[in-house]
Amino acid sequence: MRIKILLVNPYWKKLYNIYYDRGVTKRHQPLGLLYIASYLLSHGDYDIKVIDENNKKAELEKTIRQTSPDIVGLCSTTPLFPEVKTIAHRVKKINKNIAVVVGGAHVSAVPEKSLLECEDIDFIVRGEGEKTMQELTQAIIKNKKFSNINNITFRKGNKIVSTPDQPLFSNLDMLPFPDRSLIDMKPYNSISIMMSRGCPFNCTYCYPLFGKKVRFRDPANVAKEMEDIVRQYNKHHFNFVDETFTINKGQVYKLCDEIINRGLNKKIRWTCTTRVDCVDHDLLLKMKESGCELISFGVESGNAKILEATNKGISLEQAFNTFRLCKKVGMPTLAFFMLGHPGETEETITETINVAMKIDPLIAEFSYITPFPGTMLSNKVKSEKPNTDWGQYSYCTSAQLQHIPEDELIRYHRKAFFKFYMRPKKIIDILKHKAARFLQ
Image (cartoon, rainbow, N blue to C red; front, top):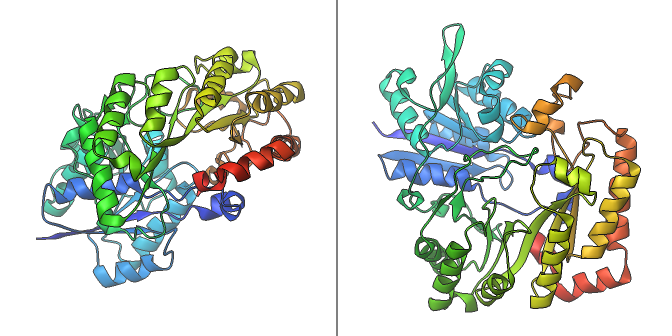
């Protein structure tokens, strides 16, 4: 029997409406769902549809009624979980026999709690989901024992059961390219792509969805995917979603050489995110030669003690040196800062704003630090009874730590944007670089 699966990227625009209306929020393809779809299609006879509700929100119920899927799969960050619960309820209202499966960072961090909060979710797939989803779909259709499948959390009678973790893929090249033919590619100006999974660092505010060990794709494999996308979809801008893109400089050099040797550097531009202690002069030049036009760095705070308390393992001196180096080689930069850290005061926020202006990236993004479930920060503030209205857990909305009154923090947030951007030099700089294209 051919299994019918509907994969849904929930509607997130309302969470970031202020940013979206200003053109600040990027349009990201549901890369995780596309990897799931490709893996399933390479391992069996599936009928798979993918809906990105951010492009066609009204399609979901119509598609469910028309296609009668056996399984509906959803991905969930923390602020999206209320929307996921709503979708799961809508699915069950149409047909209670449809299996609802949810993966993503939020449910991976708090799987049991997620099932308790939503009776319409049948299964949680934790962490790296491709192999688990393939095994789970077969078990659902063939009515096999779910307890034999690693990496899932589900109900068994009145109990909630979590099976052991699934071993991570040691070779990412065994994953087929994401099947982008399953979505309408026209709305996406920048193509999401990844070269690695995993992050070895211990930042207090991050949840390691793909584990601590960093695993890499062959650079030739990555360049081939980029080449195919240019040919098939006439898309020429790529955004690497790796947590720390340049953590292995040798891999980046190889990828840059692959891009240059294929002549892709004359056709494409790309961006990435990394750390201020993971680049050097020669690497920046090579990245620029291969088409890199923007690098994002997390600086997080302009106060040395607060920065140290995040466990990020970088110093302000490293930040200053790296941004000077980027200016020297002509590499545009984006710097991330977070406001509202534990111990934050008006003075430390002022320091952060001043550091942002001194290092002077092309673009600065100021957000609120948020104690997402599963992070060390969340564990640290549990005694403070943080807000569990998951829809408020967004870098772009009100902070959850309440070390500073919310109205004051919002005022500081606006002040940071105003002071950084409302400078004649910065306005000219942004217009000169046409910087808005980096954020669309």
